[in-house]
Image (cartoon, rainbow, N blue to C red; front, side, top):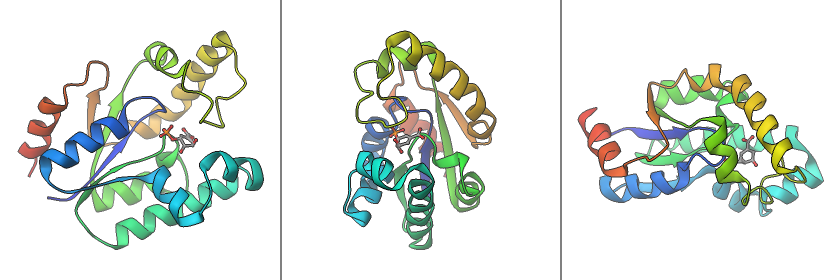
Length: 170
Ligand code: S3P
């Protein structure tokens, strides 16, 4: 086994898939956002509001490095922006298996319309603004997401199939 990093846009189902994958593989699961919240003692929304996104990205990079240095096999669900800052994508590719859960901007917008308030980058947007923002933002991020070693279509993700696939990589 190696550490498995699940990456993908907000709302692509990284945490849900990651929990199931970890349970099936009988390894620990870490949600990077939750780990940052525990380490910093603050919710993500408060970190963004009080310290700003740059400081959040620094905390995110520190949290990732800390987990990577523990070299403990597990499944880590990253935040949507994790691969895009501080060379995190390269760090993950050098330390484990990276899997991009890919979903269209349209599908993401539908999933996020009722789940945007916990996400500082999306809050206060109307549905139309949300769709436009996600379309552009995803396009900017996809070059990085595509550096993942494996790409799995996230819509209708069959976690059992995914587990079999990951198991076959060993
Ligand atoms: C972010 C995604 C969030 C969280 C933060 C920033 C992003 O995680 O890390 O709000 O830049 O895409 P999820 O992908 O788990 O929502």
